[in-house]
Length: 240
Image (cartoon, rainbow, N blue to C red; front, side):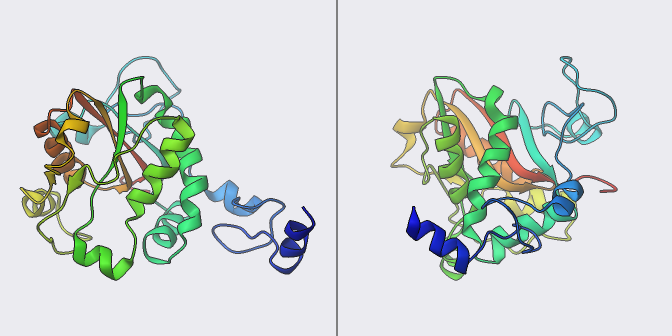
């Protein structure tokens, strides 16, 4: 305990977003907490996007999910990808801030708890090996381990593979994203016996068009998954 006190005196807790001092580790300062757009109230049952209105037990969908065939069953997201939410995702994804996976998983667990059951298995969206070598870690795999611990469910970090490298998709149209990811993700042939018959919860950092999650879902279903749901740390929404 004394060693922890010494460490904290040298390296006091900082805000995950702006690095301002905080009272506890792995937290947000007051201003950043107020500016973080946690998703609540009415949500799309398929992707987790925030919708106008109060929380309801009715199954409702956003405009995108009513017009795009989603291969997964249900989906949730913890944050809107804007402001502090965007900063946190980028710090986790490109800033070597791997410690963000722990609080992120806690936020994700709150929205994903109804998506899991005794038969659930958590799998991350895979990263191509070249991108993995450059980044040194797959942020979705970090999230899946932390989320598995929060939900007390098993994980399979290499259940899916990404044998074909795709170009960065940021800024591309929805159609271009889906075209680029066609056939880019496949089940790991050494893990099909683990996936078969399971209720899969796919985990990723952010959902934009849903193309990556759709390709991952199709790969999990090809491996014999009973059903697939998704959860992301953040969701890109219109006019965020």
